[in-house]
Length: 565
Image (cartoon, rainbow, N blue to C red; front, side):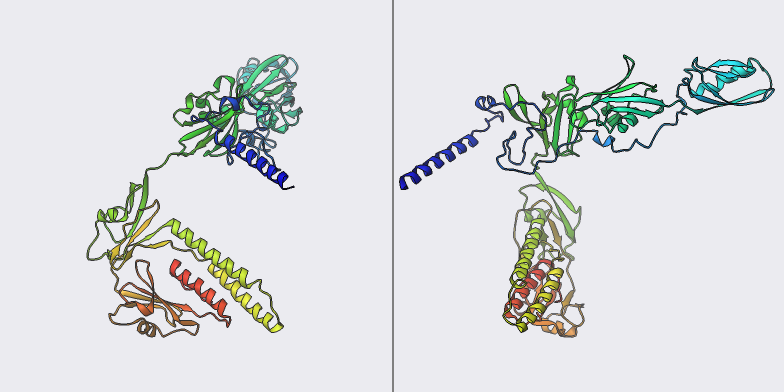
């Protein structure tokens, strides 16, 4: 039995080593798969079947465990068919409308002869006016109708006659919509309805099979119009044929298509014309973010899967193939950082600096009013520090809830105490979770500034000298007072009315202008300081009181605020 176990263990180790070796040699140095791997080509039978998993870097459908399938990438232009055209039919009265048999013309004349008639356009394309005769109007535009009828009337009544015409109604048409649409069929409309109206009536173009770029209108066996909806989406250009009864709109099969993802305005599947299978043609269609610098192309060729990485400047000359996935990325390392100044100084408030810039190097180049700026109390706010403070506070609050809200009680009296404590904790957690840490980083101590490396987004504070001192927290009258040398923290608290009934007299903190926090018992006050009196925890549970006190202390350090309990 032992010998079999050892053999099984050795077999597992050998398989593991083999898989690891294959993973380490997956790509050659130039990003192209090796010849052995290309020999295991995945057939390009369906665009969505072998989508790349960018997170894992795997190509093809090689999932071993059931997973939620990714959201399919929709074709560019799919938003055209959301019912936006279903209720917007043309009235047929636009100036360019061409008159056809079956239309109706309202005629009014006055003066030498008075006529008021509704005249149909007959099969020969004429309207017949009593006492005047037939007038040919078929093929005329709506804007030409009035002049033609006036000429006909005045040929019989040349003087003192006025003519008014109005194309009142048009002959409805029924148009066949077929090909790769959702609901092929015969749909009613008017001759001036747009091609998009009839496509929308048919449910729009089939997402997976239909072409947005190859749509034709047939009249009998003759093609009368061809439309590329990409021209309409990008340039507003579209063929606008005047439909006749029995016309057919045909949506052809989708041509070559590629999936575009990454740092783009929206992921789409773009259809390309067969003679435009280049990166340049795709860049005309895709809407990239401004900072895109590189392109990752993955797909399948006759020799097998391929993967390549280009700069955005190299991509226009690259050949692409149907089924490719193209990921645009902002992969350019910025060699500069931007920091901001606030407080008392001369010059601009933002500086673009090299990535290795240090604090003292910048401060040495900043002119300040020497009589106003406290150069020894410089502080710095940093986003990463604020995030760590936020995370630390959240973790402390979660531990507090987990420790006390789930504790059991041995007696009914203990249960009542637990309920009151749970209410206290719930209120405290709700308040504490709303605190926003400042991310203040103490960079000066004992009138010396630490020369740290700056980071992008740092905000450096150069405070002015202050003549005041702030007293806040659990005192009767929180206030700012003029700093008086020699006075202690207890003296200032007494000047603010003394401690409130909720104050913890053993938790009095002093916050310096540079962000440093000290206990009031071991610090000499100076102008610009803030005295914070923390609250006493209203519980006899010593462990709970200690935990909440610690959290209050961290909040005072991170945000310079005092929460009441």
